Image (tube, rainbow, N blue to C red; front, side, top):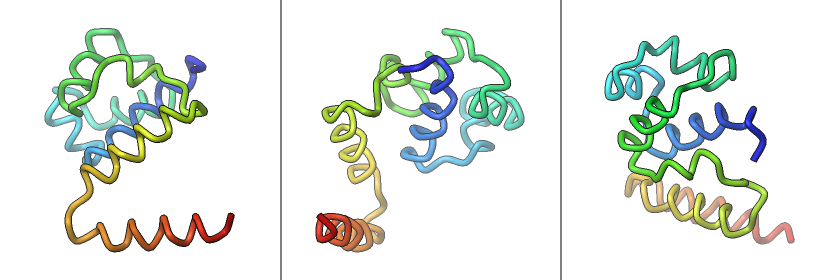
Length: 104
């Protein structure tokens, strides 16, 4: 994983958790503007900040540094999205997967 991808990993896992930047900031003790700056790469979070984010987001620290081009990581990410999806969204997810697979 490229170091510049750290911000996109924070954003990705925040969204999987269903949190806004403000909600992640509230739960982690960071200002939402700081969360935004981490996600855009303007600021680089410390290891301590990443540990806090991992705990709040319910992931392991290494998740921020995984290669999203790796098939196993892609499968794990998709499983996380599905697992954390609200029940009312499951039908939409199934339809989206069906559409994506039918284009093959």
